[in-house]
Length: 377
Image 1: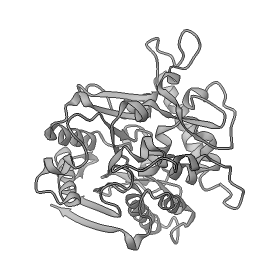
Image 2: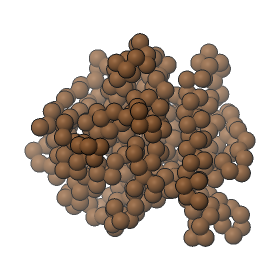
Image 3: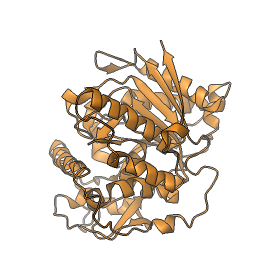
């Protein structure tokens, strides 16, 4: 049953991902409540964080061998990147710039494509180890995503992460179904209706789709994972394409934190990717982004199509999700051009970056980004 639900859900994801390029950019866009987000005062943690426009890329040729990611290499790559990003003389001091030992810290992974093309277990375990060595107890760490079933499918289990809470917004109850004894989705208990992204568009969902949308209508509600359960969020996406665009830091956060997204994929993909991140539950809590770029894909994303897998053998680290996404966009675009999939960068594919920049979430202009590259042997 689990595998059937995952397969069905994956078809939905691929369908809506394909609609990214099909959108008519000249059509009138539905209105949103982005003006509400701008009313909230920024904090010291607000995006783009402590190091706007700064990205550290750490490469290691030995980070993946025979399709197996090397945990020790991943740990070392993150160490080098954290020290370079912060300028700290000790690793503990580097991490303490972003978290403290009393914080409830959420690791937002991307498990969408199953065990072969999701945020890797090894990179996530390396981050957990770094946090533990900083003094953060495992009981204060949460690994989360929108869909709990996909977390399990991708290998995020109690066996791999003992003592760490692993949770999703859309989840099964103790009765093994998505619905409680009153016919209400268990996922309803996980959403915070006081925080929402409103857009003047909607879509009717059938009975099979509704459990993966949680609600219909014009409201997309934020999960309690970001509004209540986490004090700080570390974003851990995987380097993947979405058509001629990317699904990286901003996309991982935006579409992973709200409900009722199919309507947004169809009409407001770029806008939602930027605007949902401008609301305080994300804007003010995401303190660090660590991109798992050891293994990714350059085509067919966000799905797992092995013929399009690529070993980039890198991690990208920074506080500025927009700047990191721009570097990731350039990497994916270069690979797609090299593979003959396109001749030049798709302007539409990076539209969301400039929307995010206009919302003061980070730096989208390539010549204003400071990229430091480190090669680890």
